[in-house]
Image (cartoon, rainbow, N blue to C red; front, side, top):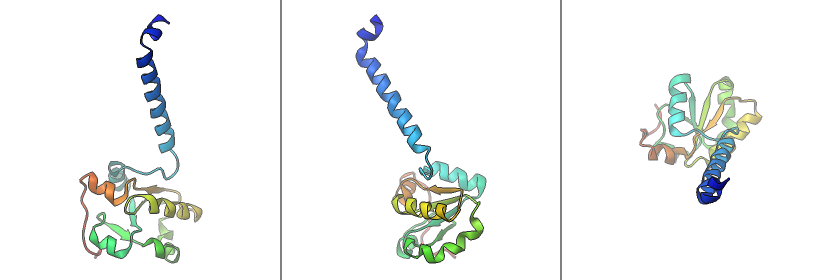
Length: 139
């Protein structure tokens, strides 16, 4: 007890940082919490995850993840049927910063898709991690 009283600042600092770490761990474990670019790369390489870019066509042409498919968010309801055969496959949804794709993840979950992931930080996070982007339309 004497040790704790003499080092109260350090004890409180340790408790605070431990609590913050637990809060981040539990918050990140929720559905569609978001994959880091590194986690996304592993999922693509190990499980052949499919990448769906929901940005507009002009944004997509400006730079997109290799092998991604472009289905703009405003066309998503009409084109969601294109993904039916991928219902049980891992899907990574991508937008500019991760916000729009999170909403589309919820739409797909309501349609019965089970392995949905949102790229945390979107294309901006991917670019910041120094990972490659392709320019132009997919051939």
